[in-house]
Length: 213
Image (cartoon, rainbow, N blue to C red; front, side):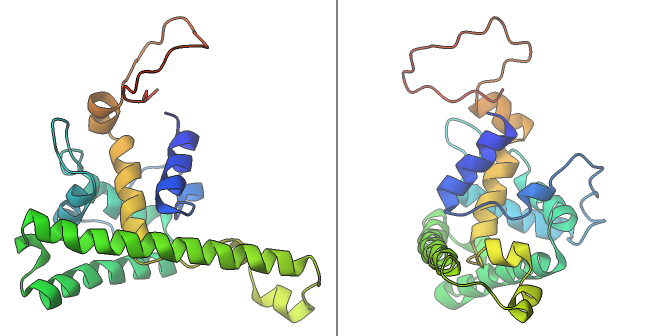
């Protein structure tokens, strides 16, 4: 699975393009604790990510260090506005756990965590569907009229092309991206062949895991 395929998969799962995906080029990442987040933030994000990709007979998100990955990606690839929204999402998870269950997220049972984040996931998916439908409607309307100069000046191409996301969507996207690009995810969940053999263009598929390479 190459990067383009992975980003396409993430878009299919979350209903929208990955936040910051087009900014993730080769660079020297900022270390955890020296970016916008603390090691405690990374540990909290590990717990959130583990609900999305739990360990079963294969490793989960926490085994892959997805929490630390999130802090680096958000710090280095998100805009200031996206970073603020992500931080607000973290606080929302904490407050909803306290409001709904009377205890911190870290102290919730596995079932309580799943119940809480599953509801957020469903809401995020529905939000993305509505936002994309509205975006398509706006695009169709532009076929019938040209925007005036002031509207064109006020709306940047990125704002015009990307709908506002649900607060939970970045957590899903970064969990998937971080996990499947990690050594753990690529070698122990996906199949990995460091030195590919001959190319065979037509193979029978029986439901086994996708290739990481």
